[in-house]
Length: 446
Image (cartoon, rainbow, N blue to C red; front, side, top):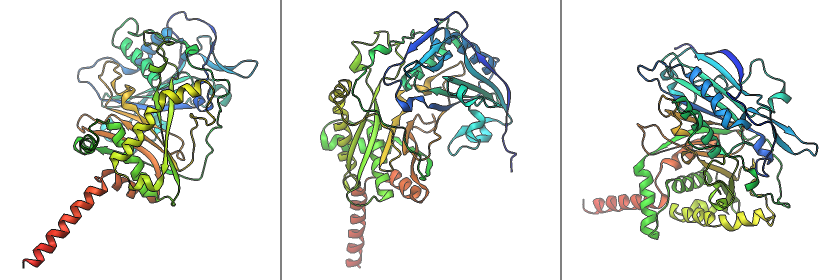
């Protein structure tokens, strides 16, 4: 048995902006201040070694972070509260927490951090050692750890505060770091704060943070082939004359497979929630440069009776999802005016709700520090009681799609996985009927 892989944290420091930056408080938008945005999002980016590469990833990325912070200086600030209790960013160039580390093994030894993880995620994520005062740690906006592996590859672990940027904005910042690491003087796209562009509805309902439950959901990675995806896309085209996306097919299949695996009681209402970028709806307020990196999304919810989801075809479920998407302009406008009675941004631990996300559209898998794009992007979560399903970019040698799921309990994992890899039930029934007919004819002809 191979020895357990270990990580040695060599140093930790604050990386401050490489040049002068504005100081003082910065206002956050209504959506930035939403309670769930205070959480630190976590992700691991895995980079294979490059033959002949002489640069040190730690020094390269550390220098690039310092230069990028000149343009994205709020990341170097701290969360604070005004006299009236409103959260804002206090910019004094305090810096980003940065950790340098070495692993005792090669990336191949831990399967390039494929699921299930062969290393504890906390070894690769930037947790200050010794731990900071909890009150101080809650103010930090960004923490980075670069861990070298013996093969020459490395992993970049990020913990970033959702209040400063959504997924699209975080990709923009990471892309800026990559551009500088590869030799550019400054980012191609200049950062724009412009939080005043986001609506500030006076009467919009705000939900509390999701309540922890005793439900422990299991992580599962599922690779899905191009042929499998095209099977359902072709079905949709044949029956509707329209096209559908890979994401629509995958989340329709995940929603149905989950409902079948859990076997909800008759009459149970189940929900599918997914975030939608609303930058296009606010194009008249946002800068034309595309440099805005704050939170700018809306969570769309599609609800149905569980029996309907279980018994519908994938084509019919995709139609439900498309109908939900069509509601976006009207619903977002109503929310912006404070006319909605239900909070659309609520993240719930309700087992009836599945929260899905498409990371392939965020561009995390294209961030290049000079070693090429990452081999693997690993989304992480500490909340095993919130049902999630994330689409990430698969490895180059595994064309198709990959889903990272944490949406069913242990007793339902096998049924959920079998449902995900199976083709639609109607087709299966047709195949079984034809086989049975063949058996009957064969018996009669003996």
